[in-house]
Length: 101
Image 1 (cartoon, rainbow, N blue to C red):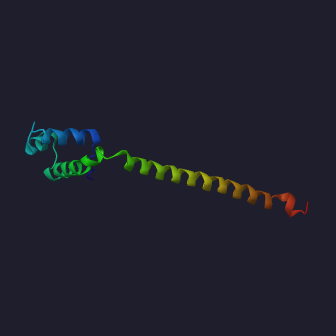
Image 2: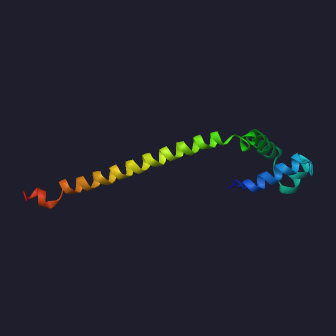
Image 3: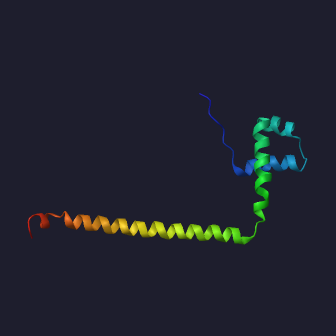
């Protein structure tokens, strides 16, 4: 069975930077690290596509952080509601209530 190799983001960055800085050609990198050219070119395209977001204004990041905070509050509220429902369910199904006490 053929298993897929996985690479860390640091390794991918190193490979792409070697190509972009022209330390090595794409062919050299592929031979050295035993990678297919398609894979390396996809990493390079992803890197170049996402590079502008690195210098994006903090407003974008703050909007993301606000959304995360909202979702975390929602999860907390739903968790509390679930716990209350469990406790209420246990009270109504307790043996004391079934015996009329």
